[in-house]
Image 1: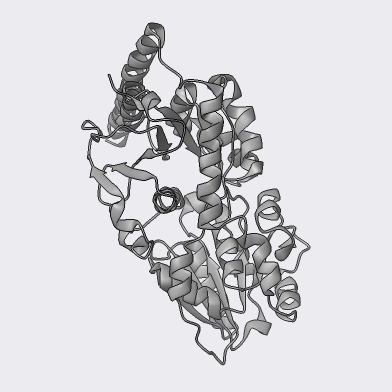
Image 2: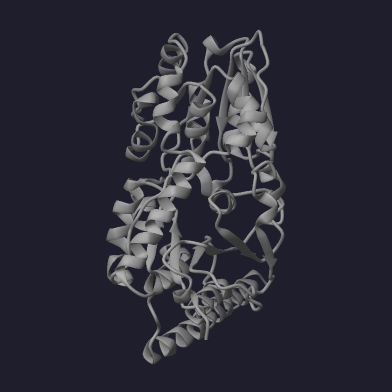
Length: 418
């Protein structure tokens, strides 16, 4: 059987496996698409194995090798692409343990390729910082892939530190590299600046209950009388709603602040909003990487953000950091930043040199070189294959039991109500 051990020791073919939303885009899906573009630009043959056409895919059409990326749409992940990759990258998601993970692992084994798990955030890290913790079972698919992975790729050194603690025993001899996701430089180049008589402040956030750590509450608390006559542009993936959104509207109306939400904007529009802003406000309590402040700095827009180790790592001394506390006046802190000069090109280049498309592609190539030096890809033995099949069945059995308990509770509740 022909496999990738015959291809030589350079990274030439990559399959990226991911679920895609029918509309909109999430951070992880964005990461997957821009990874594909960056690899294609480095001369790598890239195949995206996805369950549906990514609605956001056209936003990357300005990348020079965009049309060379193969898009393999397979709704049930039962029909693998007819390619022979040296590397398969699994992009996980926050849902039940499903067919995608098993198909990706089986495909990787048949092709004798290296398997990499893209790790955005491990539960030990997320739950140590977020005010609303997530159930660890949401990471079951990540853990499964970690057992068979040759590399667990994190977005930052801080993320990699927590990943080693969480996946260490599962991952055996896997490598733990980290790669800063790159910025869409082509959309930035197409964007235009526009003069405005108002001081404009921009915030990229989410408003659903599961995203209460994203800083919408803190943004509402920061708006005060000194904002009168200013404009607040909020960039979000879904139409804003909920308690925090209502708080922002109420306090903005009280202090004469114009508020405009920009839902599912194009890449070019996003950079135009960033470039004309006087400040990006980013009061998240947890972040796996921090795309908004990185993109703001590329746009030469000052950033005020939460004092998180991961943000200090990525945007270094270019950001203005605040430690959240009850005694902190966020409004005062924002005024201090607005009174200062903007970001110089030299300051921006500190961040740009580590988050460029070229830097990302080059470093991923180096990760592959390390994998080759460590030896052949992890191969399943018969015992692991049995474990794999049992795990698949156990996952669905567990889901069936949960559904059964839910139905039983509903029946009991209905009996009591009568």
